[in-house]
Structures are given as structure tokens and as C-alpha cells.
Amino acid sequence: MIDKKKMSDFSLESKFVHGYDGIDPLTGAVSFPIYQTSTYKNPALGSDIKYTYTRSGNPTRNELECAIALYEGGTDGFAFSTGLAAVLSVFSLLKSGDHVIISDDIYGGVHRLIEELWRDYGVEFDYVDIGDVDAVKKLVKKNTKMIYAETPTNPMMKVADIKALSEISKPIGAYLVVDNTFLTPYFQRPIELGADIVIHSATKYLAGHHDTMAGLVVVNDEKTADRIKLIQKTEGTGLAPFDCWLLLRGMKTLELRMKRHEENAIKIAEWLKNNKNVEKVYFVGLPEHPSYEVTKRQCSGFGGMLSFTLKDEKMVEKALCGYKMIMFAESLGGATTLITYPMTQTHNSVPEEVRNKLGITNKLIRLSVGIEPAEDIIKDLESVLGKNE
Figure 1 (tube, helix red, strand yellow):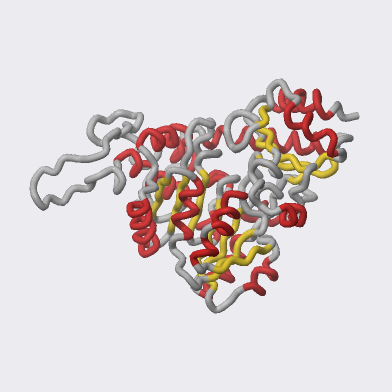
Figure 2 (cartoon, one colour):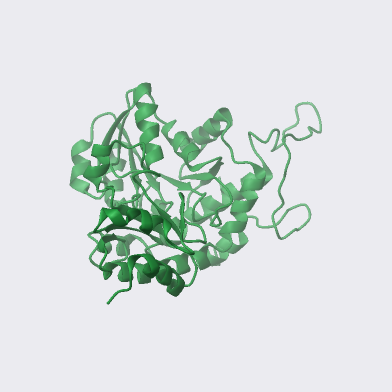
């Protein structure tokens, strides 16, 4: 359990820069060291030492875990080898016979995890438009143990009202789990809004440089923390020391990057809106987005993710591959602008009829807006989609 008062005199932005302990307690090194070891010497038989074996704990991982708990306002943090490993640890809180209400517009890897594995374990899942509070209420059962929300969702940018969901989950004793990957604790802090657990694919914005894979979980009570710690240790999914260090380094510039991502995304969403070849833009920072007011109420920013549909399907290949700077690649949240085709990449494991119902059609493209100058990104888009009149 962390000391939530750590650096309480300073802003969240300063906390990103300095981390939790921030320096090596042994040497005072201002870059927290990579403790690249698998095991630790015992001073004596029966000695009570903090670290015994890196699968169970490591100083570099501990610094990262304490830092993300501090940033999210939770009690404990946990670092995993990937974002999906983080999701797996949270699903491992469930048992056969439990019921979960989950976003219908969910990352394809989580959909695959549910449909190919967890239904076989006897856990029941109901998909729902997570932004429709009344629809969520109607799905509640006596055995509902978890409400799971991506917000904004991937790739259709639906928004969950976190406080309203917590008012459903708390009376029935269910976990409210929020995937905060798209907005990060800089723009959105779900625990303060009533969430019990926060998940990150830290591969994305938190790491920020397309150079490591990681998942993070933050919880807000000791009992859940003890269980997640047991799961992490037993499943062997803890993040390696070097990747922990890369993540700590990446988060030092999180504020600066998120501001630039958002600034660029607002400009690009407006530009796409007025492009003759674009049918519709999905971005939570547009005033016409159906959850714009909810977003403003519970967040301090809109992030850098958007999706759009083309008017003509014949333009898709060129709109993915025809750029000089923008890269056609999976993933998101790094310094460089990436363009992705959800139908064949992030959501290829989702059945076609489900994709079409959600709007993940063969004309939908997702854009992770980078930190290059917005003018350069728009210039590259213009070279393919044409200039606006």
C-alpha cells in the first residue's frame, strides 16, 4: 500500500516527472536503476527480506507500481508483461458462475479472451453500449460481480459515465473496472469517480515511444490488492525490470506528450470533418459527440485518439498506405502518428456481424495522432484525402 500523501504539496505533473521514490535509495541516482536480477541473497536462515525472487518482486517494478498507484489515486499498483496480461489478472478475480457486464465496443484482444477462454471457465458475459446507463441497469443480475468499461472505447469512441456506473456497481458489491488507456491519469482519474480497478495497456501512452509492452492495474482496497498480488506471482506475468525502467522513463514526459496529442487531435478532427472524402469523424473532443458533456464533466482533456469513415470504400488502401510520414501500423499512443484498420487488425477476431453492428465497417479507419506538428500531419493527410475547400 502506497503513501497517498507522497509529494502531496506538488502537482500531478511534477509527480509524473519524479515518480514515487524517484531516486535509488542506495546511491541517490536520479534515474531509478534497473535491478536486472532474478534472485536475491538471503542474509540468514529465516530472514525477513523484501525481495526474494523477481517473479515475486523487484525494486524497479516496485517503483513503477507505486508510481502508477500514486498517479491514479489508488492504494496499490501492479505491472504486467502486456495489457492483456493485466486484463487477465482482473478477470482472474472472477469464479465460475459469476456474471460480467462489459462494453460491446471492446478491444478485439479482450473480446477474444472472453469468447475463446473465459466463457469455457463458466463466467457469463453480457455486452452493452457502456454509455447507456439504463441499458447497463437492465443487465444487472444477482450474480453480477463486475462491470467493465473502456472509456473512450476502441475504436468507436463511446464514453462511459463512470460515476453513474459506480452508483450501479457499489450497491450490488460488483467491481467497477475502467480501462483508462486512451486518456491516462493525466486526463482521467476513474478511482476518484468511483471505479474500483483501473487498467492500462501501458504499451500505449504511458510508455509513449513504441518500444516496450506492458500492462498496469491499480486497485483501491487491500483485499483486492492481496488477490492481484497472488495472481501476478502465481501466473508469473510480472513485468521485467528493463521494461519497468522504460515505462518509468516514458511517464516523465506524459504531461507534455498528452497535451500535444490532444492539441493535434482537435485540429485534425476539425480538418477531417470538412474533408470531402470523409463521411464521419468519431472524436470525443468534438462538441457534436453524443458524450461531449459527460467527457467534459469527468475528464480534463480529450486525448489523441479518433476514428473516421470514408465515403468510398475504394479509397481505403490508399488512405492506409499512401503517406510519407503517417505509418500504417497496429498499436497507438506513441510519439509518431499511426493509422490502423480495425477490421483486419485490432478487431479481426470479432465476428463480422458484431463489427458491423458496432460500426466497425470496411470503411472505418482509426488514427492515433502523434506529437509531430499538426500542420505536418494534415499535410500528409491532404496528400491522400485531398485538400479541404
